Image (cartoon, rainbow, N blue to C red; front, top):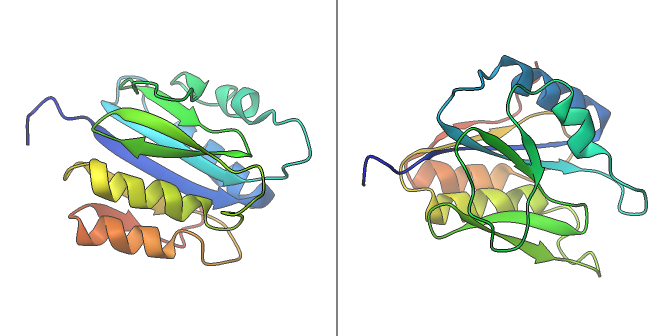
Length: 156
C-alpha cells in the first residue's frame, strides 16, 4: 500500500441522538488530522436537509456535500443528501448512489461501509454511533474482514 493512501473514517448513525454523537466526534477531531471523514446519518427524505450547516458549526474540518465523481480531500468531512447515498470508489474518489424510490432505505450505512471495505485499503475505520436498527453491522463486519478497525454501538 503506498504511503500516500489516505485514512478513511466512516461514521454512521441515525436520529437526533446520532446527530448529537456525530457532532461530538467531529468536535474532537483536530483540523490537521490526515483523514477523510465520510458520514451517513439517517434522516427524513421529505424535508430540506441542513446537515452540512449543523455539522459545520462544530467541526474544525470543512463539511462538504459530496458531488458525483468527486475526489475526496484529506482533512474534509463528506456527507450525502438524504436521497443520494455516499460511497467510496477507487482510492479517494466518491460516488453518490441515487435512490429516488428508497430501495436502500435502512441500509445506507452498510452501503458506505461496504464501499470503504472494498476501496479503503488497510487504512479504514468504521464507527456506528446511535441508532435503533442494524444498519451498519454488515458493513462493520466487511471493514473488519478487510483489515480495518471497527467500533459499533458506541454512544458518546
